[in-house]
Amino acid sequence: MDERHMDEQILRGRVYGADHDDPDPGPRPGRAYVELVGGPLDGLLLDVTDWSPDRLREGAELATEIGRYGPGGRAQYAPRAGTPRRFDWQGDTR
Image (cartoon, rainbow, N blue to C red; front, side, top):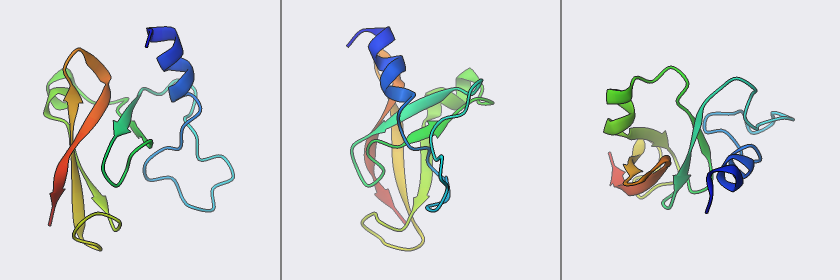
């Protein structure tokens, strides 16, 4: 997938952490996002606007109630090699 197509896809997604009743849960102008791929948060966008390059390389451990461990669980995501705008699911933790 080329960069332009990926940018268009990201602009249509739902942002992780947006309220379920938010009438516009999509990305906001001027913000930077990565797409979460696989696992319980598949397809959501994660706002990484203020993340440092080191933080981006670390990936994310995100709270979710729909993962393997239910409420209190977390889903782990890491940047995809060669495609830093996508974070791949690594597994669930407590």
